[in-house]
Length: 93
Image (tube, rainbow, N blue to C red):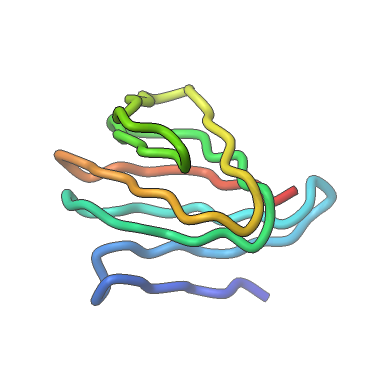
């Protein structure tokens, strides 16, 4: 069964899936700045657009474009910023 997730008044939406590769979400976010918390290690791959990311303990934004992946540790908060719509695939480890 697919599960639809909606955050920040609908500006970030994802669909959760479970298969042989594990748990994951496929999502899209509107332009804006958002802060998320993690409950598992997340491997986030950008599938369209550019996402600017401020990981914990960092002081500068890093940019990730289509095909690039960043990893966020478990039980932390991190910020993202998009200047246009961005699509992503997030795998939970």
